[in-house]
Length: 220
Image (cartoon, rainbow, N blue to C red):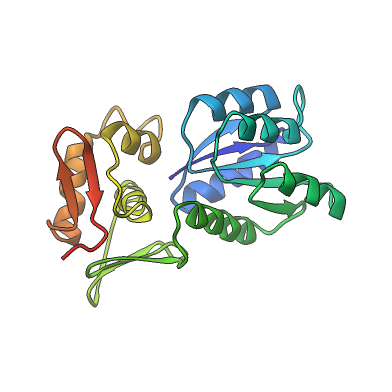
């Protein structure tokens, strides 16, 4: 799962990045509105965390441009402004949720999980596929009654496929959403798929030749 964090205060951006990476996210950063607009318009993210008070281009303008361009990526607004009028303006502009500074990191993570689930049409924080259960809060995976140990990379792959269960994800989509920049050159996607299959069962992740991979809506 890949997220764009748009925040011009370096300390806050760094703290958010550390927390998100520990929670299993791949994180890109942007420190001003123009870079945020370019990155969000040209790359595919699972979510965007967007500060309103940005240099060069304010966050509300970035959000309006994205929605006008048809970018439907869920957006969580962060801001030091805590007036109800600004919250309404942000939601009306297309934000999916709103969090005022200062905030607790656990609340940010919970809200981020919620907006990405809603965007994928998933109601529960526990994702299920046949005997496999993945808890997005605790980042634990079980097969039947047995706990399964996954690396951070293996977890991101399985979470991405389970979040979009029933849809075929291409190799390029998976690489973009699962790998960080220093991982994609040293790990082969096919080998990663093979490792995860060994741990959760070979029939859960299907290969669609020429198209990609998927977890069926009703795996056996």
